[in-house]
Image 1: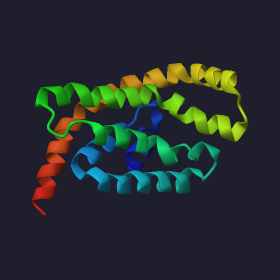
Image 2: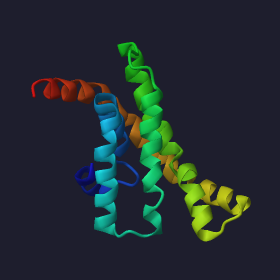
Image 3: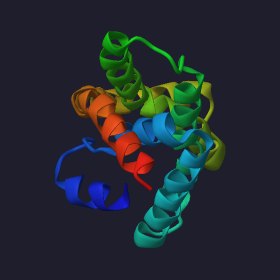
Length: 152
């Protein structure tokens, strides 16, 4: 997860993190929290444990939780639609999910928080568009990962 983020930093708000979070959750369920939080810690070590990092403690867990709530026996056709949409929705909502921590850390009132979210909306839309495309990899990669894990 961490390496993919570093490699893809040249693209604005486009990365594999949402796709990998969903894929790991589908395959490993509760154990998917391990790679998620290893990523969060590595990110903090690499870029510094600063205020920007605090929301990472919960933002990826929200995507994990939403994925955990999805039906496990979803029809295959639905998987190819639902997973990229969930991945995309998380990208679009990223700024809004980030906002509570920002508001608390910087003493922002409701209007300021809404303005902050709206100002970041173009970046969140790019994030969502990128996530819908990389989200198309979730089903084949989760199939591959299950197959590889069954060989152990």
